[in-house]
Length: 245
Ligand SMILES: [Mg+2]
Image (cartoon, rainbow, N blue to C red; front, side, top):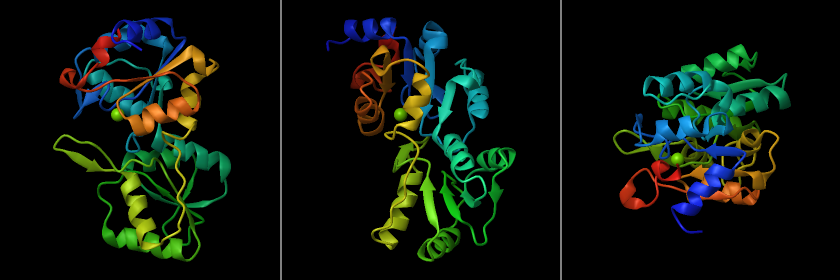
C-alpha cells in the first residue's frame, strides 16, 4: 500500500470506518491536527473503538465535543463500559467487585450490577488510578480463593499527559506475576468485541480500522480481516489522521 493516496482511497471507499482515539484523534487530552476535520468528513460511517476503561461513551463524547471533536455517544465503543455490558449479559446475578473510576462505577450501578467488595463471584478490573496496593492485595486473596477476574484491556500503558500511564493490563499482569498460571481474559482490543460493535452490519472488507498501536489496533483488525491503517500522533513519525482526508 502506498501512502498517502491509497490511504485516502481506502477511507473514501469504506462503508464503516473504525478509529482508535488516543494517539489518533487526541494526545494528552488535546486534539491532534486534522482530527476534527477527519471526524467531520466521515461522520456517520465512523465508530470510535478504544481500550479506554475510565470513561463512559457519553462522558467521552462530551469531553471530545469540548475540544471540537463531535462524535455522538452511540458511535463510541469503550473497553471498560463494554466490559460492564458483557458482565451484565453473561453474569446477570453475579456479585461483582469492580476496580474502576467513579464514572464507570456509576455506570455499573445504572446497569444494575450487584457491586460488592466482600465475597464477590467476579472481579472486574478497569483503570483506576486511585487503587491502593492494599486493595489489590485483597483482590489477590480473593483470586487465590477461586474468584474469577476479567479486565477491560490488556494494555500495559497508555500515553498520559506527562508520560506513560499505568493501564489495566499491567495491573492484571501484576496479579498474574503473583499467581503464575492465572488467566484473566479481556474485552478490549485486540480481542474481537469492539471491532464487531464498530462494524455494525458491514462485512469486514467493507470497513477499515485506523489505529496507532500495531499490537492492538492493527493485529486485532487483521485477525478479523478488516483492512487496517497504521497512523501516528506526530507527522515526524509517519502518516497522521490529517493524511486520511
Ligand atoms: Mg491509540
